[in-house]
Length: 116
Length: 110
Image (cartoon, rainbow over the protein chains, first blue to last red):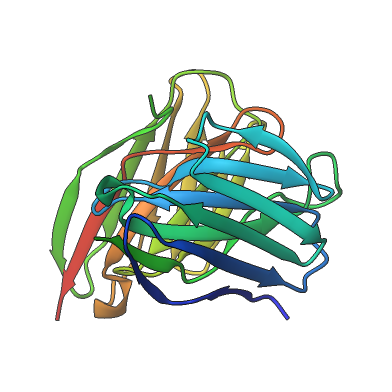
């Protein structure tokens, strides 16, 4: 299974809502990532988990809260978002640094988030 | 700021023609990767070239890497309408971080 799944595909939320994005992979990858992508722009790294521990936080506002419950799952909890947070949120996974083989990232299809 | 810059920003060709995209980066790298993204979808890994490699092939794809010029190129031969997508280079410097270039939007006209 070389697939990364993300739910939901689309999400519309108000600025006072609390919602969560979910990501799952069963490739045995021990590195997982959240990216934010605006239209016609490259993905911007938000968070990296390595062996279920947060290893990189790219100075993301606290209204985004990541969670890695186990080696297959990655969540992104959203609270009090702003309209400018509307974007495509991509999850990815890879072998961790130092592991044998390449470290190419496998991406999910993304969640299209709209904040009203 | 992004490590990689790509040119052209947009490229439109006819089916059957070759497409070449270029990527430049600023710092030393461990490897450079190319990804494709169809509109509004996730990215798909195409090919990885390590810093000690100069050229790599995969099907209709050919990637070159010139570390002295800090640049890479992706050649797609005999293009098809299905190759229409955005193409991003991404550099890995250390750890888990990949830094993406701005991307090239390729349109292949039938």
